[in-house]
Image (cartoon, rainbow, N blue to C red):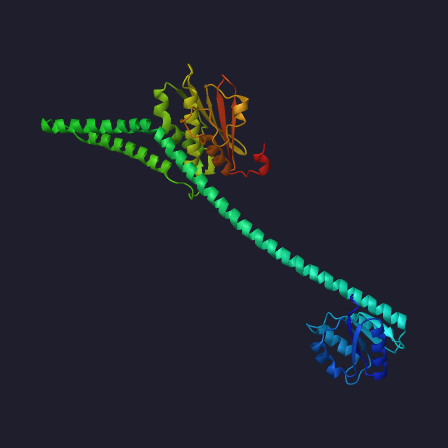
Length: 409
């Protein structure tokens, strides 16, 4: 505590008050006194004091009551107070200390004890004041850090939302690119029912023109079936091509999703003399998913398998599905060129591709990996050069809980 510390003496004995004032000034303190408690609070309001020496025996109001009033006052409660008394009363001392007194000095006052206890009280106050300043500074720092953290969190949330939007756009772009690649096969799929419809319509027209007695119902029923088939193909394309970013997940049969994905590419695969084998589970394999996104993964894997078989003499693709709790597993194997260990380490990285420049974006497997991961699943590859490849999709059994440790297996 600085030697400029200011002390207020409250004692109705003027001689004692004046003597204490002079003594404390010799110690280097700025000191003043009052003789009556009625001017106590006005004096505290006018001047800032670092310590109060308060006599217990005062006129009209005793020092203990005054002590309690100070300690209950919002402005002055932190000022240390040393009680002065000529009574040897341990119970009174205990009461004052319990009520907030800093210390107690018995009269007659001995100078060394007075000096030491004032110094101790002021040092304790200085330490408390310093701690309060540090706490305030630390609190201000914490508030500033919290605000900065909140700002950072908002920026991260915005960045995460931007990332999700970008990912959704990539998924959508990948789907549209897949549709573009499948356009020829899809056109052939649509031409078949259209050709049948045309033939049936021509036959009906000829029968009418020649007045041939003919029951038109079978032909019309055939037309309806082909219209339904074309509508099914178109509806499937519309479903596959729509933006699924905000689509809710639902309970789906993985076998049906596999069949839907294969229907999109089957014509292309057959035209390239690729043999397709299906070994699907005889019972439904229920998963909780966005079916269009899972189908998109399968379409991508089928497209990659198709390209890997381009130069092979034996061209086979095998699709399998099975249950292996807690997983529902889909395997796609081919007799393609295979993948080296070095490439397998990077195969799911964005923009990595082994295809020629201008063919593909290198995003298909990366997007597929992200889709399966978002479904709490795993996408793995097992391959050997010259021996083909096998991609495995692990998706949680709809009735099972998959833990983080399971995902790491």
